[in-house]
Amino acid sequence: MISPLKFNELEKRVQALEMALTALLRKDTLPEGMAPLTTLAAEMGLSTSKAEELARNSGVMIVKQGHGHIVHEANFRKAALIVIKGAKRKIGSKYWYHPLIGKFTMTGRPQP
Image (tube, rainbow, N blue to C red; front, top):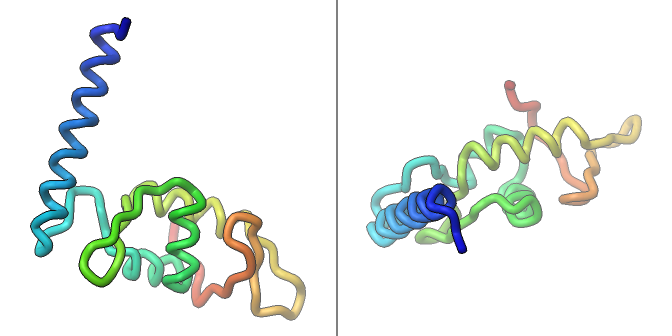
């Protein structure tokens, strides 16, 4: 048996997902809290392909919209900062490495 508190929480999550799906069907608008993957990748200094891999491997909600992808902005930023702070780089190499996304390059460090 589900408690009334848990049921209310689930009902709110379903309503939020319904609103997000409705907004996705209207291709001209982005749901609240979502942002284009390419924009966030550029802000974090990652390539679009590595940003997509990061979103998929870290469990961030990623949705294909039109010709690109959109992701949950806050969760993506949090995951990207964890990966960037945990990445290692050999001396003299231009490549960084993190087990979650493998070898990658960074064009710039994100501003916290």
